[in-house]
Length: 505
Image 1: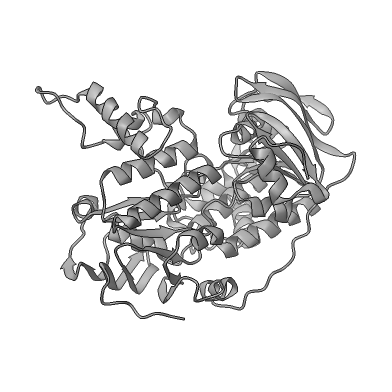
Image 2 (image 1 turned 90 degrees about the vertical axis):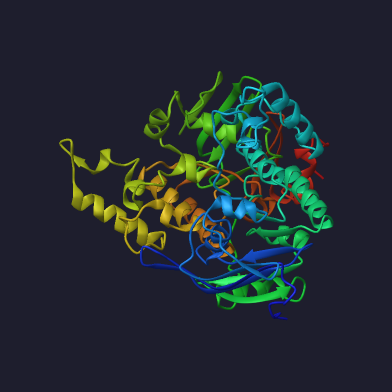
């Protein structure tokens, strides 16, 4: 049942409002959290959750409202104010400095110095090693952040926040880049923090994660506070109804099996250093072929290699039965292969540029006549993309970073589809996206296969593979450990193969 905001709240928010470029991001929002609890914020992309936590963290200023800490009204004008109040946050958008080491990022601004006031690097790396060990994180303190995987970067981001010893730790989609093992590690860390009487504010679109960590929950919809309740008091379908504002209706998605014997993409003996070893598979025309496995076993590297931004050392790639060469992205696009990368904010979009420019970025050549861009044709393509993918944007001249995460991902889809590539490589395309938008993307993927597209689909969410894929390639230590099909595609079999255990049951 809905619960009133408690007087015992450690952090209390009342009447918070925020506008961005005429868009109402929050309207008279309220929220409270207690020490020793995990309080989850849930709602669709654009509901106001991330705006609220950015106000709490001093990343953006509020227009109206009041913030109280331990009963006292406080001002949070910037991130330094938030840190002084014992608030630290981990956002989906990484804030790490790529050319610094793991240790330098964790201790940034708090580095040990020698008697000359210079950074004492031996002590820095020693302290970092001890700290990472205390967190049970297997990360080398001297590695440069740019050389880490997205999952490892997220772990560094979390470690950086925890090092500040906050009383309130905010995790905004912090699991979206993590694999199963890393998520389990994070949940153990959350449990320890709660035992130390810390408050954790947790944002995720994955209901299974919320069931594991939530004590209380607050729902936002359309920039407004809807309700707060004790976790377990509402059923999942009731939560979804409050999130969306309408009755939950599940529309079945058929698993596209493709055309037997008609292969859009064939890969034989693909290898790359120690990351990929002798990978062979065939993707049917009109199929969604799943790629599974624990994070870090070569899945993303396979997709990026097929797109040419990290070419293979050996192997044969065929498109429609014809051998092709893919040493860069331009060659991949020319041969009808496009990639939706796992990190949309860094690799999929230029956030500071307009929505319109991002949509047409990979298709400018086909909108030219005698080397001149035809503006009328460009506008038509942009309007069609916005309408067909239901991208919620008031003006396509707005910067991509003004959109919610789900709408940003729709822009990435629009850009890929406008490139006219019939083979789509997807790397975790629903990462950090709300339930409603996920469903839209699932139906979009299924619809694309009916239009002759073929999809190679890696996801960290097992339920997505079970929902969308009739065949799944399970990767383990850079190899395909198993190819599951039909009734073999079960959670049990995928997990077993992901950790190197036996054959399909």
